[in-house]
Length: 139
Image (cartoon, rainbow, N blue to C red; front, side):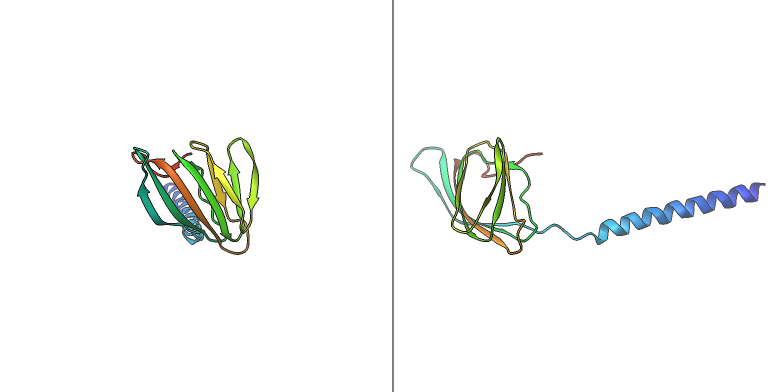
């Protein structure tokens, strides 16, 4: 009887171990999310005390999303290539194509996404308080 119980417990342990290994292997094989790159092209202090301005190129690969975030200052951007889908707090989801511009108010939660088939590139201008980060991720 003891041998049978031991065998059953070993078999159950082996099945559980293999099941767990399968889940770990499956997670490890999942492709990584595309990485968005932001390149600061120019950043300067403004004549307005305590504020700075930055010009930033944003590259969004196909399938990428920025994650929900906000800015402590103003953002104005233009789509240079591709199409940007923008979820914006309190507004309908919008799609912006090449040449389109958009404005994001300070503190408004939003998220840019590339749901298209080609990379999306933006040029963004930020005016923000120097003592705060340009972008703040939110949950």
